[in-house]
Every structure is written in C-alpha cells, then in structure tokens.
Amino acid sequence: MTKKKSEKSYALAVCLSAIFGVLGIHFFYIGRYVEGIFDLGLSIYAFYLFTSGSPGLGLIAFAIDAIHTFVITIMLLTGSSKDGKGHYICYPGQILKE
Image: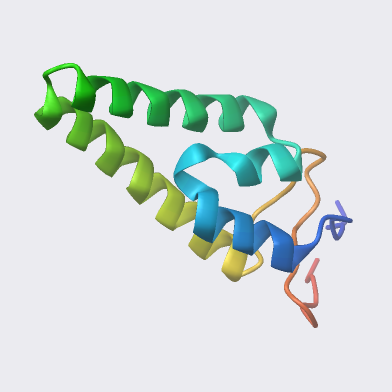
C-alpha cells in the first residue's frame, strides 16, 4: 500500500489547528467532517456548561477539547495526520516511506 501526499496546505492546516483548534475548523478544511462536528459540538457544550451554572463540568469539557487539539496539532506538525481521503498532510520536504 503506497502512502500518498494530501493536496491540502500543510501551513494552513497547522495554522487553523493552532488558532481555531478547539472549534474544529481544521477538520472541516482537511475533509474530516465528523471529527469537525464533534469538536465544534464539544466546544459549544463546554461553553453551555460553563455559562449555565456548571463551570466545573464546562472546564472539564474544555480541557478535553484542548488536549485533543494539542495532540492533533502535534500530529499535523510532524506530518503524521491524514486528510479526509486518507492522504498524509506532509510538511515541506517530507518524504513518505513505504
């Protein structure tokens, strides 16, 4: 099975993940829509919990989302994340090994 490079921009994917990561915007860009909806939903739910009288649960939900975003951003930075088609989002100069 050959590894393929994604047509998605590495720099844009990393920037979206770093800036808007807790909202899941980067998932929509790279074509992983289910994960994007989940991430966005978790952010909205965390905000709802925080403002509706359960700030502890809201912070827990937000912490889970932030940790997930951190892991995904690291995966993008190292070139080990895939787009919606299963192709690797490669950093400039990355060589995919079989």
